[in-house]
Length: 285
Ligand code: GUN
Image (tube, rainbow, N blue to C red; front, side, top):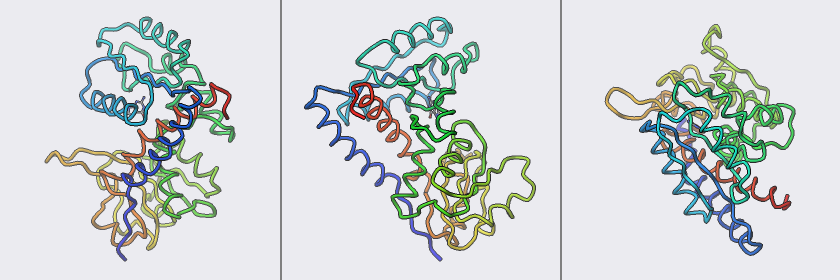
């Protein structure tokens, strides 16, 4: 079998088209979604992410503010900025780029963001709402995974989904979203015995562990759908996922490439969250 490719770039483009149309109709009501992105320090990867987020805002007609703070910024200074952004009516979403410098407590920062503006979906109240199935702003990469499945006709309902990885950013929330979509969900991690055997039982595999090419062809049930959230840099500088793409694409029915699979969805879902937060702030939904 040769798997069909789940083209994240194309699907992200499709969703951005939908966002643009909604933004245009909101403009007629004088509503403009606004996103504030905060970067502390000079982590090179974070700088690229932040630039891409600002660019996406521009393309979609959103208002955006980028706050670049020096690495020595104190936690109190960062919290004061968040408090100001929480009160700003032209800002509907606040994203503080992670990781933060060691002297700043990530939890204190995440907790300080207003739940209504929590477009990352990392605030404990957002996480709680996700768990109980309330209408929360959902973390971007996990909701991107669900969109990729649905928009390729791979409805999770009734399927056995195996998630490899239990991070707060991907593994746990994507498991909750799959459960909400009526999948039977197994969460695996570093202490799961015989991981290969568990993965072999999956109709849907979501790999989010950060181990290059961990998932091999003989781990995958023929016809399974494989979503690779991993982004790993190999010694030769090339990017690769958590799935051995060459081998697994011979066995799976659908597979996401790296790059070009899950990656393009993350910023797109951030824009969708910002749009949703803007509509809510204006009582539109
Ligand atoms: N750093 C890497 N991924 C993310 C993300 O999804 N949100 C934030 N805020 N920082 C990140």
